[in-house]
Length: 287
Image (cartoon, rainbow, N blue to C red; front, top):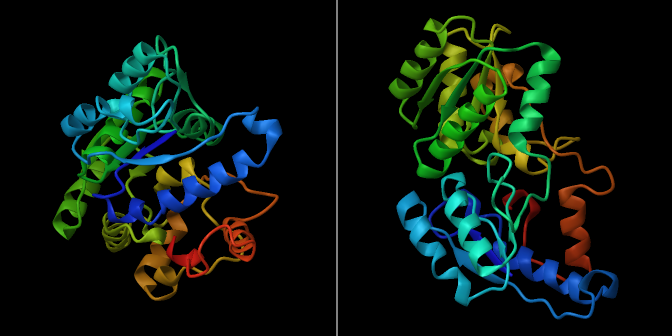
């Protein structure tokens, strides 16, 4: 199984430790006959380029390394990946591909579609008008554009779709566009969470606080937390403790994430360490 992602060019995603995670997964798979069905599984980590054109090109080499693929993370490459996987008759398991995968015969979506979950939340609160702000990297820009297209197809008016980097002026201009747009209630942030070290989101939320946009007029929703279980129960985040402005701004943030009721991420990581399944030096707060 090839595990694809921009592990070498995105510093935050590299902290997902794909080598450790995939090795842990296949180890548990191989010792459970009810899951492995007599096959011996192995994983190989494949680096996905951060630029979309190079990411598509890199897919062509994946066939020789794996009989199945997990990934890619860039939704812009999903169409090509799905077509290639169908031609190779190999399964493609991706939680990042937007849309329903119609015509992609071997595409498997292992979790509820993030855009669908977000739409359900917006519909529940009757928040129709949405702005989508994305980090400038290809991965996040493609996520933002795909999300806007998906929400529009579901009947929601997405009036602002723009990118924002780590410069304060970029954040100010993007937020001004949100203020000038008619009736925008929700700002979806397609970028790394500030809780995990995302600089674009930190600058954006701090500037929103400066501009008086975190008083309840707008709701800021992080997109990335829709794709993994972000620890939230009695978990201290130093970035909030050490930054008063960000902590005030975070009152306007609504985080929608996957629940993990049986065992938290930290607990699962600690259990794996105690069972000598992963190296003892791994710090849960750094992953």
